[in-house]
Amino acid sequence: MKSHFVNGCYRLVDTINEDTLYSSINTDKSNHLVIGYISGNDSTDFTAFGKIVTNTGIMPQPFRLSNNSENAQSNVCLTRISATDSFVAVWDEQTDENEKNIFIRYFSLSANGTLQAQQAAQKISNSAGVNVAPRIIYNHANGLFFVTWFSMLNKSIQMQYLSFDEAANTFKDTSYISELEDTVDAEFFADDLNLHTSTRLNLCLTQAEGNDIISVNIDDHSVGFYECTCSNSKITQTKLLEYQTTDIKKFTTAYDSFNKKLKIVYTLEYAVDEEATVLYSDVYGDSISYFPGKKMMAKVGAERLELNLANHKTSFPVIESFTCTTADISDIRFIIAWKTDDNGVSFNEFSSDFIPLTVESNVSSASVSASAPSVTVTNNQKGVIFSAAGIGSSALYKSAILMAVETLSANSLSQ
Image 1 (cartoon, rainbow, N blue to C red):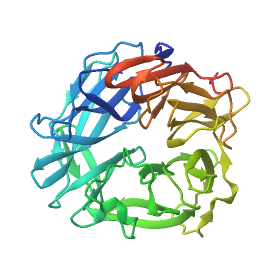
Image 2 (cartoon, helix red, strand yellow; image 1 turned 90 degrees about the vertical axis):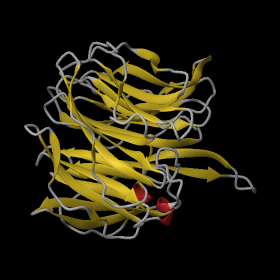
Image 3 (spheres, rainbow, N blue to C red; image 1 turned 60 degrees about the horizontal axis):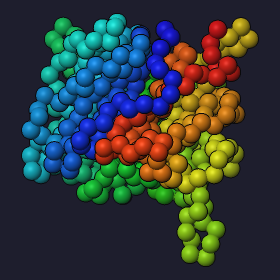
């Protein structure tokens, strides 16, 4: 279904608080946009909200993701459910002075974008202490939700498969809670972990050939890829490989289902003076052949391709895949966006081989650093959502959430 968002750059949220984008999706059936964000003035009063922009551009009022308005929330992550206008949100929430827990909640929209069903939020973490930074992905092959989070007490990445019982309106355990069977970067377990603001650390979930793939920093030069499957209430893990390059910064991943390749996009910094001052950084893309269940040798990023056309200090790359079908081809396409330190957010369309398909776009944010962006794409439009303190030459109240929308290029429009 085509979307009819207004082309241009405009505000989605601008309140008297700091409004910070964390996640965005477009629903699979009707292409309604849903964003998850945090609003508040300090960490003790942060509240998780959702906001919908219907496929015709209507913007209803925001809604709370959590049932509990007394607890501080953060780290929202959304996932859509195939062939529906439903979606699921996860977040971490302060439930006690010394405890944070992971919560999950199911939502559904009508065809015109009206919020319909929403079950009560459920706590899914069971470790004491601080549990933060959840990630979630819906596996359309088995109908399960795969969730990960960081346990500070156990110094581990925990994970679980869940199913949603529509009749009972509740999530049910499909697997036991497991821990990642490998050692990851120790900085993940710092008390102030925030993957949204870290320029280096990340954990990404990708689905490939019916399997769920975790990618996460092993150290400052390696990203590990782990395949996870669920059977008989147990999670089976296979470490596929490590992707290695010198001093890798923020990364993101996707899957090319046409060519059976995992994609990794990341930034590297360059210093060209005696004081090692970072003068610029580039965005790179690379491809990794995927063989389900097979362990592979480490891949060194010697064949990576530079993606940015303009030189800036770049960070926080994001990637979103979509299918392009014409009379001549049917292939995967990618929208890739990244933050710049001084000039807002840049983005472009790419082929499956990381070839730019049109001119690079930039959305200025009044010379004020933008936040990590998020990308959504429909059959005919691409949208980049981000937080910033200004737009063009105009200042916003504090930090607002903006969306830049463009029509897909002729090279990416399906016929």
